[in-house]
Length: 487
Image 1 (cartoon, rainbow, N blue to C red):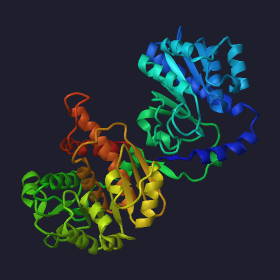
Image 2 (image 1 turned 135 degrees about the vertical axis):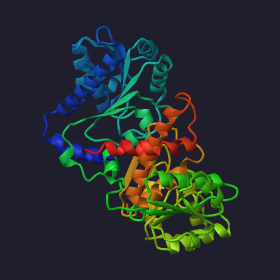
Image 3 (image 1 turned 90 degrees about the vertical axis):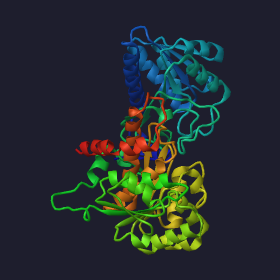
Image 4 (image 1 turned 180 degrees about the vertical axis):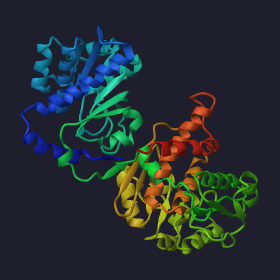
């Protein structure tokens, strides 16, 4: 598990470190880290650094200074470096002087800058830092587009310029980085806009003792593997966790099949299905005990309710019955809509071990969604008194106590019909096994995303769509992988 801090928290932590460090030492340390990653990138892409050309897009202030000093380090290693100064009169004086001492080339007009970018092996994005908001200005946008058109990889310095460092939301024009080097601590953009950052390298500049507790956590495979329920020699089907699934309808029987099957594959001891799709569930998963109503289902330790359920009075009655049982509940899809429509259902859910799993559209039915998805999920969890898993390319899991997990999916394979039903079944199985809703949501999101990657590999080529059934089928392998990652 690693932490993520806001830009403001990182800047506050830098102040005492800067105060006790010789002037310029932190920038030099950061620049050496950028240069090391740049050299490794050149080696990987070209087989060596001899004859390589790097262009630094240097803005004003310290971020531009980081880039200029990185250019100085690269020149010392024989790389041809050109710095395009986007604000020549505000370029970092010491960094600029150092680069020029090493015979680095500087340009201050966009036309020549575009030509330099077009002939480069690597571009360093040192345009703006974490204090910037909004998209790139026209000159910077022209240079960023030139790199994209020419296919020249961009290494972002701290964060990709033009993408909000707090929310991960890109402006109208922004840098799409192949990789990023950041300093002191990871920022929200690195997990909320992970595909636009590429692999992130963290350079230690001594901020650790000055940072507050991380407001956002990111799980790794070992964290998930350590918490995944595995039967022991004394377990039976009841002690492993019995999950009930109230989902599906005559119109959407597939939701019931996907959720029930995912719960079974997620190592549940037993799955009990209750609903009008009982016949379809039995046909697909004969190990599931299927009945027509919640009242007939028998004893369970957690419920999954909502996928394909419907939002009519019958659906509301089913959700109320499940909530009244006082057990952990995973509420998804139509159940989220019903919570938004009925204050009495929200009152039943508040303060109980309930995990809701809305996508952006469903989230808007129970709370206000802003560009700051972390803050939106955290506020919704506190206001509703339930744990909120906000689905998206970066999944946010927020607990009413303020804890937040983010899972930065590296692909968009899960943007497919039915994938949320699979996630519901997995998370419900974890609730039945005894995980609290925050951990159940975080672990389920991690394995769900990994299963999507596995399922994509089994499809007909890397660009093929991945149906939810492939994601469901890949769950056992994804679970084996996280279990194998335990330290």
